[in-house]
Length: 458
Ligand code: GAP
Image (cartoon, rainbow, N blue to C red):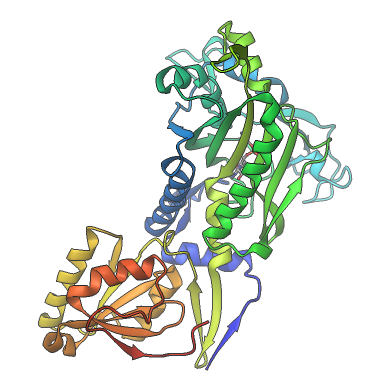
C-alpha cells in the first residue's frame, strides 16, 4: 500500500535534494561560496535548459507574431539614464552602528538591526546596478553597467527588428539572458540572487488596444505554468497597488507562486505604455515611431511586458513537483516533473552487469540518446535504481532482464504509478515517444503486454 502525503515541501528539502543530486551548488563552493550566486550542476542545467526551451517554443516557435533576440549584456551607459535606472533603480539602505550589517530599511518594522538589535543609520539610496569599466582605464568616463534587466536590449533594437523583419503591429520580441542586481536582501535559495536569468517579452501594440493585449498575456502566461504541471491552487494573480507601480508602468500584475516561504512573485506582467520608446527616442535623437500602413499614421507603440525569471521558474517547478510517499516503511522521494521539463527522459537499467545483458542495454542506450537525454545506471539493486531516478524526476525507466535475451523485449516502468509494461525492443522508441507525449502507459504497441500493476492509476 502506498500513502501519498501532499504536505507542502520546506525549502531545506529542496536545497538538500538539489545539492545531493547535482541540480544546484553554491557558487565557487571550494572557496566558501559567493553570497547569492549559484551554479547549476549536470541535472540543474538540463532542467533550466528545458524550461527555457519550453518558453521559447511557446512564445516564439509556435507563434507568427513573435521573434527572438540576443542583445549584449553591456550596453551604452546612456541606455540606463533614459530608462530611469540611474536615478530610480535604488533601494533605501541602512547600516547597523554596532555590527555594521546592512539592511533594506523599507523591509524593516523599526529602526533596529534585525541581527543584533543595534541602532541603524539614516537610510541612504543605494543603486542596485553593478558597475564595471570598458577599456584599460578605470575612470568615470569608462563606466558601464551589467544590465539589471534584458528588456532594454529589446527597446533599443525595436527599429532594427521592424526594418529587418517587416513585422507589423501587434508583434513581440522575446529574449532570454542574464541580468545582474546588487540586491541588498537576498536569500531563499535561487529565489533572489545577484546574477540570474530572465525570459522577457516586449509586445508592441497600437495604443488603443493595450488593455485587450494586457489581459491576453495575463491569461497566456498563467496557462503556460499550469500546462507544464504547476498546480493551479499554487498560482495566483496579484495586482500592483498605485504605490507599488514601477516608474514605467501604467498597470502591473504579478503571477505569484506559493513558494515554501509563502506567496511571492514568479513573473511580472506590466503595461509599460510608450514610456520606453519615448525615453530612448528623446535620449538618442533617433525616431522610434512606427508607421501604420493602414491608417497612414506615425505613432509610438505601447508595450505589454510579460517578464519571467528562469531561476524562480526552476524553483517553482522543483517545489511543485516534489513529493514524498511512504512505500513499505520507506520514504520514496519523487519529482513529478512534466516530461518536457525532466532533465533525463529515460533511464536504461540492465538487471545485472552480465556481459550479454550489458550489450543489449548499451545498444538501447546508444539508440535512444540521439533523441533524448538518457541515463544509464547499473549500480546496486533495481529498486534502489528506480528510487534514484524517481528522485530526479525521470519519467520512464527501461529494464533489460535475462528474458530480454530470449524474447527481445524490455520493460518500461512509469515513475508516477510504478506500473510496468513489456514491449518489443524494436517498438521501444515509438512507445517511449508516445508515453512522453502523454499516452497512458497501458496503451500497448504490437506485441506488448501489461507486466506489473503496482497500484491503481491516480
Ligand atoms: N523588465 C521588467 C523587470 O525586470 P522585475 O519584476 O524586476 O521586472 C522580472 O523582474 C522577473 O525577473 C521577476 O518576476 C523574477 O522572476 C525575476 N527576478 C528579478 N529579480 C530577481 C533576482 N534578484 N533573482 C532572481 N530572479 C529575479
